[in-house]
Length: 120
Image (cartoon, rainbow, N blue to C red; front, top):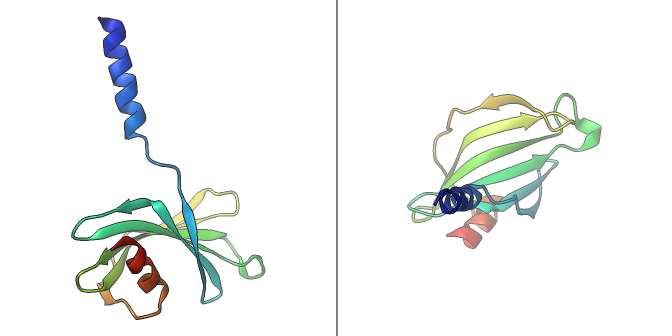
């Protein structure tokens, strides 16, 4: 009986593990190389996902990249960033900004518009 219980607990823990990131390239914006994580997409009235921006080596100071948690309102074509974590070159987290910014319209042809077409 305890063997079955152990198996069920182990199976439930494995299914609860987050998916490995699936970074998809978006292109360059403001000198940074942008990606979105397809594996992080959570759909609902508000779609949630992660984005990663790589800082070019020539302009790096303390950080090599940042990852932002982004929300999209598909019905009204709006977007906002809810959290940004800056990462050092050794991949350790640095500063964290978890103050959501106000909702903004998604501009046609923008990186967010490309993501919206994929996830909404």
